[in-house]
Each structure stands twice: as C-alpha cells, then as structure tokens.
Figure 1 (cartoon, rainbow, N blue to C red):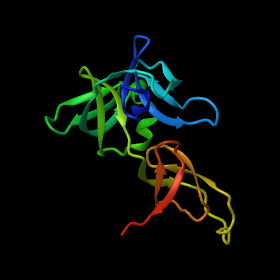
Figure 2 (figure 1 turned 135 degrees about the horizontal axis):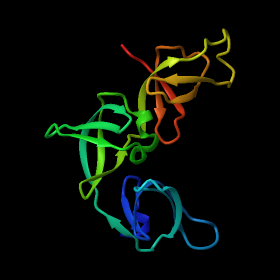
Figure 3 (figure 1 turned 60 degrees about the horizontal axis):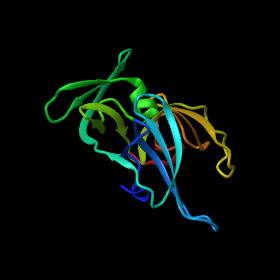
Figure 4 (figure 1 turned 30 degrees about the horizontal axis):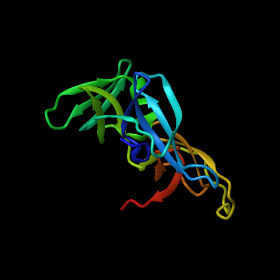
Length: 187
C-alpha cells in the first residue's frame, strides 16, 4: 500500500509492531516533495507515534476485521462488549481502548477492529451526542461573550461549553479532540 492511501482506522506493520492509524494529514510544502504526516497508535499499548512518509513510499498494511458490538459495561478487567451477531462477550483491556470509552454510552452499538482474532481498536464516528450531567449555571446576558465553562458529560468526559448550556441538555462532541460542536435538539 502507498503512504498516500493511509486513512484513520487502517493498520500498518512497522518495525515488527502493529499500529492503527489515528490521524493523517497530507502536506504539500511550497518547496520539496509532498508527504503524509501520520499519527499511529501502537496496538501493544506502546502509545502514540508520529511518522512522516513520502507520498509514494510503500508501507506494509495489515488487514483488520470490523465487528459490530454492543458496549455493556467496564470493570477492573476492562470493557465488556457483546458481539451482535453471535452474542459472544469479549473483554477488551483498557490499554487497547485508550480514551475511546469516553465517547461511548453503555448499551451503544460500535465497531471493534480485530487483527487475527485479537481486538486492537474501537472505531469512533467523527462526533457523538452525550448528555451533560454537571455544569455550573450560566451567567445571565453572557450569550455574546466568547467565554466557555467546563461541563462533565454522562461518560465522564470533560469539555468546555458555551455559558447558555445547562445540566441535562444533550450536546454534540468531536471524538477527535473532545471539543463541543453544537447543542442537540431533543423532541
């Protein structure tokens, strides 16, 4: 596979390790050749590695199986997911999931990526809707200011929201950086 074909969610073998791509950016500087800047997460829990590839460089891709699973609960041994096709339960260690669980509600369906029958990553959508469980009250008349206040969401994720948002509202949050995107209207 060529480096410019690399996308988030794909797996690559480098230096004898398996990595899952978290983010890619195609860069074309004014001077010099184009390159791909990639953020890769080590499946073995070794953390995030940033790599730069020439656009035409060849990289060793790995095949991942995608399975629809339902998130049940978390405990000391990890997070428990149930395969929606055969109802088999899988316990996935916290180091494999990282901060991904902060964007998943209990009983929500999600996609787990497997490599050789071993779970390696949780595939997230670009944004999720979560309910606010705690935030300080807003200041009257502060709708024009650009100040943000801290809010705790139902999964434990902390983010900054505008002052008019109150506890109990549902907001849309980016899974890339955890930032507030918009208020969600519920009927």
